[in-house]
Amino acid sequence: MGKAEEARANFYKGYNYAQSVLLAFAGECGLTESQAARIGASLGGGMGRLREICGALSAILVLDGLLEGYETPSDAAAKAAHYARVQALANAFRGEHGAIVCRELLSLPAGASTPTPEARTPEYYRRRPCPEICASAAGILETHLRREADSV
Image (cartoon, rainbow, N blue to C red; front, side):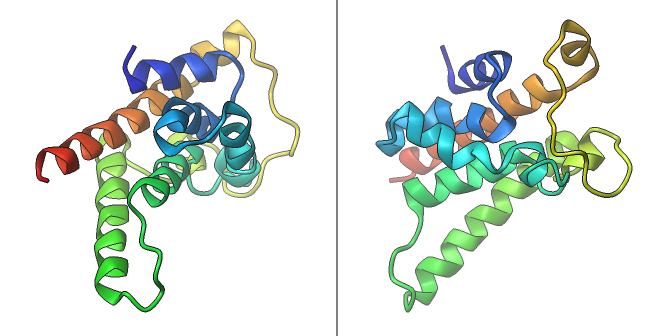
């Protein structure tokens, strides 16, 4: 099963967007499932249902940092290269979905939602693009990592 399928399946298990994507790559990052789920817990619903940056996008950026991030704050070249990757990943996500903000992706009004998540019913899954956005985000990162490996 590819990373996109894993992320989609994780969402159907009840994980939020960020957790779904983080769990798909946990092994590559040396994270346990519990650690990956906890790292992504606050990022669901566009940061705790504030409906800001999509949790799936946040997850691929966290994963890029874990896998390819810089460690030395004075290394300006590494920081610039990392930020260029962040922008490229965000632009790829925007290119596929038209937005990077949760409320725009879901056509919701401006502002935070109630902090209580919606029940995951069959109707919820029918009207939401969530599983496909999770799969897409995982695919974007998987493609990026493959290109990086091929260029080395």
